[in-house]
Length: 183
Image (cartoon, rainbow, N blue to C red; front, side):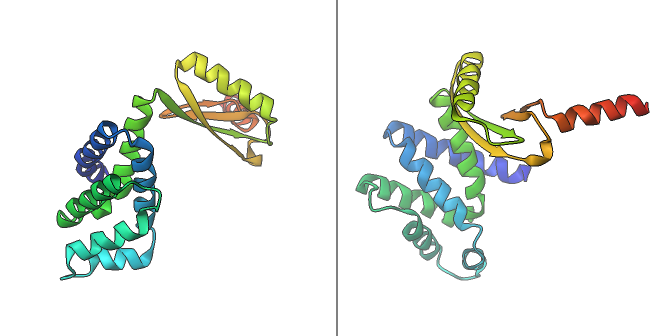
């Protein structure tokens, strides 16, 4: 996993530089997500691993499945070139890491943080908006909030921002209390 991350780094940086210079960050983001999702399909994995198959044919398959009618001709050419480079270097398997690293660079450039909020019950929109505003003020960034429900939390919520986690769930508090009482 660490090796893939290292291999993907220069490709993600190159994709980000191209997208940033051509002001097509959103198009590249969508393209890379679609490309990386293809790696979950068994047929695509088989095509990538097929010995002797022309590398440009493989990149054409990815290109056809990942580009949208709304993409500009210039973007399509850049996407095609990017896939050709990955395919020729036998690095299509790094597309998930490339996409993840690209998204991190994009969020940094846009001063955005992705936050995952997991609560025990569905929160009212007003509460979600207050949490989003408080986090935005605290972090000094725009917040992209992804909320989900996990009834096993019993009550409260868990907020995850990058590598940081704030666990305010009842389940967590009960576990702490159990450890304290048994020690």
